[in-house]
Length: 312
Ligand SMILES: CC/C=C\C=C\CC(=O)SCCNC(=O)CCNC(=O)[C@H](O)C(C)(C)COP(=O)(O)OP(=O)(O)OC[C@H]1O[C@@H](n2cnc3c(N)ncnc32)[C@H](O)[C@@H]1OP(=O)(O)O
Image (cartoon, rainbow, N blue to C red; front, side):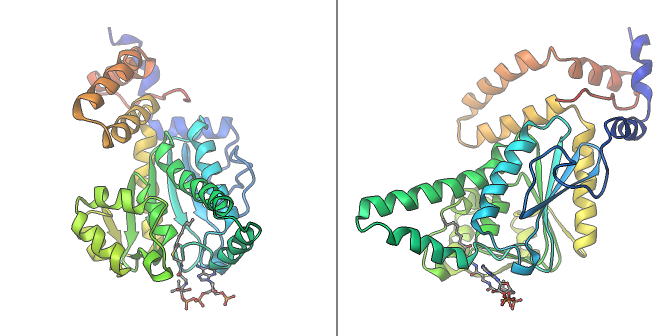
């Protein structure tokens, strides 16, 4: 029964490298276009390992403050990666000395100008509603992305950046990281996801409310203690390497299995246990017929190397 499994015994790393070579995927440094995505101005996209994408916030001179362009590009990038068959796991990191200084405060004044075009409150509300919706959707694209997203945070992670990273599947940070829900300091309620996702991520309404009401900084040790991050690394380099290593582990597994797992976990967040079970039953009644399932079961049963799963 297991005799046809010869092709699965090739070492996984070798198979991936061969695949990357055949597909002409330039590992480590490559432009987002070379990685099969749109061209981005505010993001740098690299493929550090086969099937692993690294999206980097890339406005280091502005401390990665999120201008309108960046908001739009984050949504677009994660939507594209969600559908991209060469991407199986994503590391989200940032260039420069700070992970993200929140929304670009200069953009706030252009928002004021757009509002000033209307004298009527209903028309002004429509402008704001549309803007907030676009920004919310941009961050939700991480959660809706079918591939796991690992946030790798160094130094400051402020306001919009905190909201962004709250939508990642997994968070790691460096020792120097700090997190600040700064919205109340600029006179607004956070509106792009942290108030909804943070209490669930840390399992404490009390701590989430304290952070949100006061804009108090949370340092890396506290972020680890409350479960907001899984691991704290010594510095940015070891952080990025650690995040990529973990992404490789995910990329080794069947994309049918990993993507189905994310889909089920995200669905179950706001459904009853029974609804979640119904949902995953429907998924698996189809996906257990996939080649991936048979190949993975066989590899486990015969103690062979991981199979080389087809693109999905
Ligand atoms: C629909 C609404 C959706 C989302 C809303 C989100 C709300 C938020 O994000 S609230 C948080 C807003 N952000 C902030 O209040 C942070 C502002 N920045 C700072 O407090 C500091 O820059 C710092 C992050 C503590 C770092 O300080 P420091 O190390 O002293 O660097 P600076 O000299 O201050 O900054 C260097 C350079 O970057 C520019 N910059 C920093 N942050 C922003 C920003 N948020 N927007 C635009 N530009 C920013 C700063 O002006 C400096 O520029 P120079 O030209 O070099 O002076």
